[in-house]
Length: 461
Image (cartoon, rainbow, N blue to C red; front, top):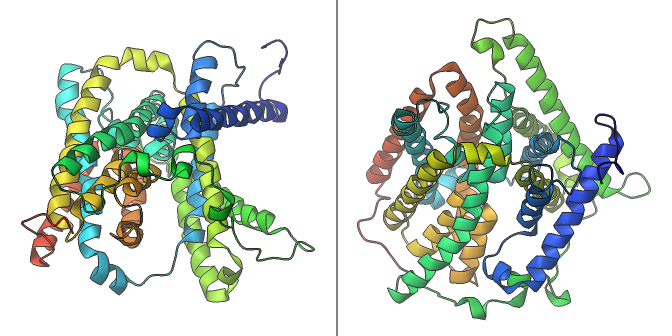
């Protein structure tokens, strides 16, 4: 196989072969999702299956698939494209609307994020390094990198750390993200069954009652929707070409900005001379600027949010497959004991903050909102939606609507935090950043009490 694809170095054709095998594995993953009942019950996405197959049969496994050594780099590029597409599909919402309608939900989601980062970052610094002094200072931060952030954040932070000299970060982040996806669904189903027995659910639905399309992922004709609107005439430019051009150009300018910042920092004193803004963060900033310009000039009327969302989802599937396939098993074997300890402690921490804060910050349907958060904070937003559809198939709790609004003020904080984590730990002040997360969380909880958003008793309906 290696002799058949005998490329000398990296070429366009080696990229073509990599993508051909990745897309082939995604199709195999989809077939497995359609045919294997256990995979359906666990809601395992085909992109994750593809990544695991690539890991097993690629250069980091049995060596049967001749992937190049650029899979991890592909994941870093894909996350830049994902974040470049996000602002282009964001809705217009006023600050007043967010505060009055979803204040408690915003506090809940923001505190859940910050506490996970703060506690696990400090656990790595003050507990894991005490037992294993050779660990990197940011080892504990790899838990929220994968759990809260998912494979996308793992690619972003892992790529940033790699550029700053820590090559193992990508593999560790992808591992925690992969474990988190499995934990989200397996643990979520166990939690749902227990909550149903305790009468904590408002609209419980057993898995056997779910529509077949949710299990297989194949939509019947009567339930299919449009991918997006045609906003340009194909006689001038195809709509999909137009939207891909926007996303790629935004991500490209983000890369240019990142390189410019890196060159500027290179003239500073160590360790600041090795710092840089991640490309995905710069792409998001450029996207926000373009979004403002487009809103003022009327260009937004010709940008289909559904199309840009689909483009972002397309690149997300690719980065999951490439990211998981690029995991270096030698790194996992090397750190398996502290990694296992971190995963166990992290699971307990996330479970505690998810359901404790959920009981006190959700004014109605506390379990439906909490189980969505569990899926999101251990796996991905998609995992949260899957669990939400089990307990609330008709979406009567309005959980998704409220989270969509609440995420608007959360997104900038998340981007800033993800950007600062590699910089802070490389510079030696990661502990201050983690303490700042906990202090900010305490202030938000104080605000929740003052605004009377904190409830003493959980509300089922």
